[in-house]
Amino acid sequence: MSTSTSSFNQQQYQFRDYTFIAGGFDSRSNNVDTRLFSTATPPTDNAALKELLTATPAHPNNNIPPHITERALMEPKLYQISPHPLYLIKKRIEDYFKVVGHNVNSDEGFVSMDSMAPIVTLEANFDSLLIPQDHVSRSPSDTYYINDEYLLRCHTSAHQVQLLKQGHRQFLCTGDVYRRDDIDRSHYPIFHQMEGVKVFDEDATEEQVLDDLKATLEGLAKHLFGAEAECRWVEEYFPFTDPSLELEVFFDGEWLEVLGCGVMRPEIVKNGLGKGDSDTLPRAWAFGLGLERLAMILFQIPDIRLFWSDDERFWKQFSEDMAMDGSATFQTYSKFPPVYKDVSFWLKKNENDVVTFHPNDLLDLVRGIAGDLAENVEMVDQFVNPKTTLESQCYRITYRSMDRSLTNEEIDELQENLRSKIESALADKVELR
Ligand code: PHE
Image 1: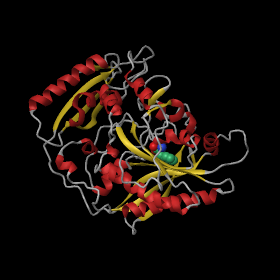
Image 2: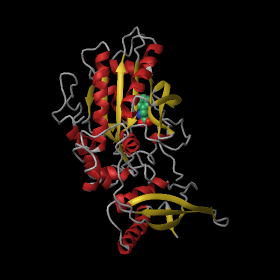
Image 3: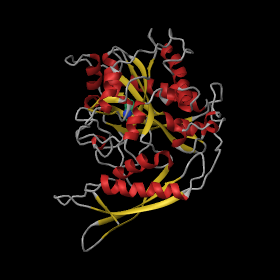
């Protein structure tokens, strides 16, 4: 659908369809050799951060619906539960970095962290990464704000500087990330990212860093997609890396974006290393990948809602010893019929004659009411009344359960709830037709 989204590979206000550049080892499980691969304790006071989420009364800037708060507080995280597919992919990536970490001259290897609360400061999520003030990702229509100072992280890059400041020089960091976004089979307001960072000695050249980045990530792609996997590099833009690149892999007949990465801007590295005043140019690379996206490709999982399923027909298809080379594919266990419902409204204008409605306002209401029964929301009609100059928009909501057939009555009830919620919660933005 036509809503804009806040991918970081966008220049300001340049809308492009968003892909997960983003987003697994369980710090609590025992099957990791911690001498090779230590899992650090959470670096922030998670308990205090979580309290911010549930503080009452909510700050006027708070735009986080209760169903999102509930998920943000949920523990363990999906990637911490064996054999969830996100757990399997995370572990597979960590296995690779155990080996890579030891190829370089470091006694530490890559440390993996996965228990940092998703509540971070605006400074960590944006400022520390040199994301401009007018970047679309800062907009409250794209990001979940708790108050003026804290938000739900929209990428794991939010922890880059924090972890450098703690002294880590090679690390992986996994977490749940939050974006107000479309409702369709590959978009969900919560998904999981894994970040990787590696710092180099002062005498390393940009070329060496870039070569190491490419070799490391091509190696990762082959580890995930098979030794034969064909890779290509595409130039990208991220505010926090320069140069910035995207890695694509040829899989199942098409080129697929797998991750975003680049050479970290030196100001960010200096800040992280506490060398703000020196004129050395410390170099580091960083990458970010989406665990759902990788799992959907590798296991052919057709709908992102499935990751949240507690249906045993989903769970029993995964195991710690299953093939991870694309040969083990998910078998859809059900295809229940969809139910379509439309809702139309006029977009109101405020005292400055400006429309304040954003499609994501509607999407949060739909998720809040229908939960994972909402499969898709799409704008199907739009026109301007020439007399009133008001714009009308019509959205088609596809309701479908992954596990069972829906009854007409329950969908009618959901739709009625949605209409009254639109009337109350969006009273100053739209008028139902
Ligand atoms: N944080 C970026 C995103 O979510 C991905 C990324 C991480 C890009 C690190 C470059 C370096 O889209």
